[in-house]
Image (cartoon, rainbow, N blue to C red; front, side):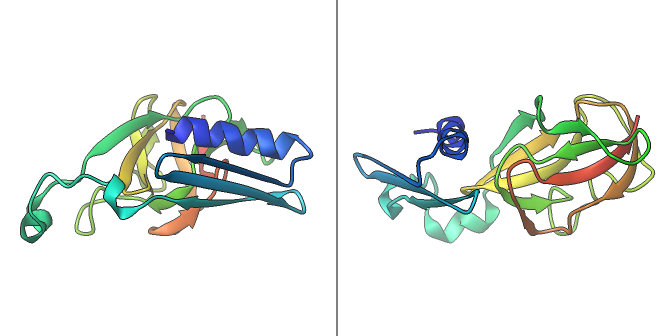
Length: 161
């Protein structure tokens, strides 16, 4: 089961009267519970499911794999104030403003962005996903602190088109 399928399951539970959904395949199990219009995800994946290509002693030197995830449809929405556009998180994970601890942020307040420009990284299940802008404009405000957890559809940036 991949991340997109899990997102679809969460949406399905959100839109229905189902209070809990459990699916088990081989060594993978997911339980999604709905409580007072909030959806909680509990994912159990055994340690054997991860395949390590390098010996444990050498893991510090291994670069982290990244996947590019364009911010699609719902992540960009008009903001309530003025004509600002809100860039929203396309997934649940941990928000990072820069590619590494000692590196410069992808974008700062006042920076101009164009479609396709990486604005942040969201780590989900040990995979670092580069989030690209779908709009052109100027970053007005960064709404999330670095290394903070984010939810699906949570506002990340305010952009002036």
